[in-house]
Length: 116
Image 1 (cartoon, helix red, strand yellow):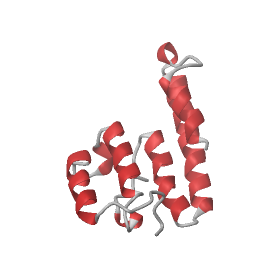
Image 2: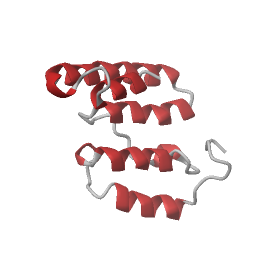
Image 3: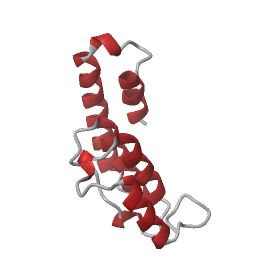
Image 4: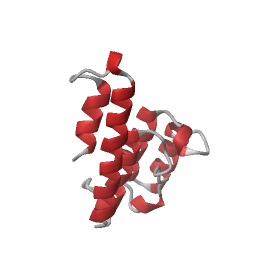
């Protein structure tokens, strides 16, 4: 199995989670936290690549989240490139909002996380 879990989640479970966590037809308009959870659940499915890919998102952290799929399939260059984009856009967001982007802020924290 390509799943990081001991046993892959059943496809019916993934389908039900997708309906709840990604209720809109376009992932880029979904709630960041729910789309994030969907990636974690679908990467545990028997076929992670059947899940929605969020590369078109304007949300930097979701660019990073897609790299979970890339890593599962050994596409390390894509993972590296999208993580760099996520960091770049995350830091751009931080600089655009200096009032809420100090060294311990949400934006800076995610930009650092997205680098892994």
